Image 1 (cartoon, rainbow, N blue to C red):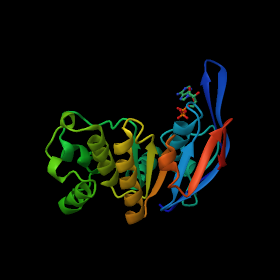
Image 2 (cartoon, helix red, strand yellow):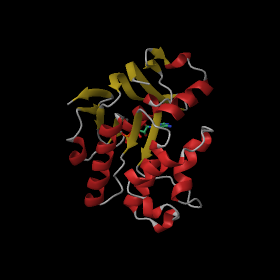
Image 3 (tube, helix red, strand yellow):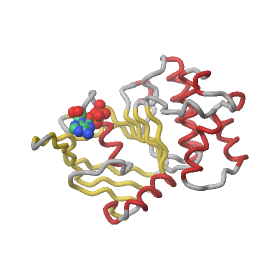
Image 4 (tube, rainbow, N blue to C red):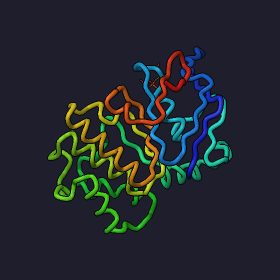
Length: 222
Ligand code: ADP
């Protein structure tokens, strides 16, 4: 996939019969290699927007277009394949499986997609994120920054074109946040992967070429 487009996208949640409007008429185009930052106060709708763009949640109205194809025309199973083959995800909390070692955690997306693991390319990714010496360690032996490196490697193994990041360094100290941010920016440049990032961190945001803010349910470029 090379392009994602949102056209007049709106999202409301309903609690009992009360409508809670979260996003209104969102328009954004994201292409491979783009660095897109989405800021906004807590509760503004950043995570909701990322979830919708990645088709993990659905919009209430408006269109989400993947490479000129409306997402509503995909069957559920096909959307799962789209996600698995094109998208990687990194969250504030790494969501590693504690009983699996570093390598096993990183291999999970390949197992889900029934792709045989090409050992050399997986090892290249592990080296790229700086975890070669940690490959057989369980998550509890790793620091916060190292756990986030595992999450990044796990996001990379299916060779995504877009990585969605929700406060990826929100749980790290400033020094480790900077190291992880540089790693992500470097990976994006080297592999032509778009980063679509919800973040408050101005040190990270300043590196992005498209900076948006959600305010009063609207998305505006800043
Ligand atoms: P942010 O990521 O900017 O902190 P969120 O996207 O998590 O904001 O949330 C935006 C708003 O939507 C918040 O008011 C939140 O309470 C509400 N919200 C999120 N998910 C749900 C849900 N499943 N049901 C009802 N309201 C929700």
